[in-house]
Image 1: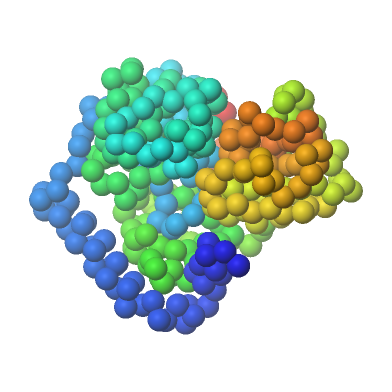
Image 2 (image 1 turned 90 degrees about the vertical axis):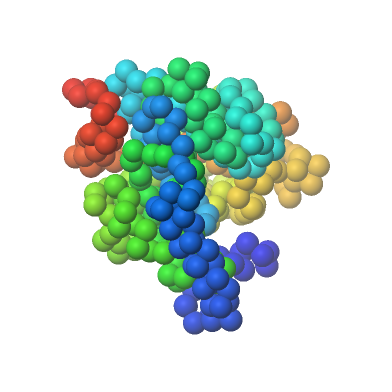
Amino acid sequence: MSLDAALQRLWYGPSWKSLPLWPLEWLFRGAVALRHVLYRRGLLHSRDVGVPVVVVGNITVGGTGKTPVAAWLARQLSLRGHKVGVVLRGYGGQAAREPRVVRADSDPAEVGDEAVLHALRQPHVVVVGTDRAAAASRAAAEGADVVVCDDGLQHLRLARDCEFAVVDGARGLGNGHLLPAGPLREPVSRLDRVHALVVTQRTEMLGPAIITRGPLRATMRLSLGDAVNLRTGERRPLDRFQGRVVHAVAGIGHPEAFFAGLRAAGVQVVAHPLADHAALDPAAAPFPADATVLMTEKDAVKCRGFAGADWWFVELGAHLERDAAAALVALVLERTGLTGAGVKLG
């Protein structure tokens, strides 16, 4: 069992199993609290980048669906006539403090897979950088009049006007403990201070955690869509793969969510989980060269240069009920002072 798998089992299992790590958790808790105190008292300073900033983040380690939520919000603001900058650290790439503008054809090994995914969705500008405040300033310099920060709830150096916290509805907040005893980056009470809580729910993984915190709560349904061939761009409904044995690749925070979705669609899956942001090594691929392979779009951007003829990525649909979508957009417009009423929700 890999270290990542062992930690997931520990963090999302019974609380008592992490007992030996509780002393380290209290050290981490103290460091988190001290950092917040330093910012509140002005001993550390947040940087205002001159345009409104919305941070979409989480309080747990691993995938919760931040990127689909951030991409949805960026699209909503773009539909309302705003030049949107998407800012992120660039996990999986060559982390650099100096901000870098990302294009659709940028190398994920250099800028990170999620950054390329955002660039493919064509907001005004995508910028990566370990210093999110500097990256947001670069986005503003490139013409963005609003910045959506994908991750960075804990990056207090970046001043923000609105915060979304994203929680995986199936896994919730794990055993409720902070690192390293649990998956939490901050205490659960942090959810009381965000402006909205978005619970992501995969339709094939029902059984959401009961989470009542957050001033405004919305549920975003994530569902698998069509498969798209990495070489040709051909699209096929997922049911075309029913009854076939396929090799499934997922280098995301919660790979089993992808595999479960494929199985729910009737696909016979040979699962190949990778660590989050990990790249598939073509020289050591755990399947034949002519195999049928299904992967996430996040993995696909790293395989474009060596994909086999029968390699496909599966689109991920993100859906909010109309009232919830309208409430989230209205909240952002109010918090940021932006305009954009009367536009059809997409």
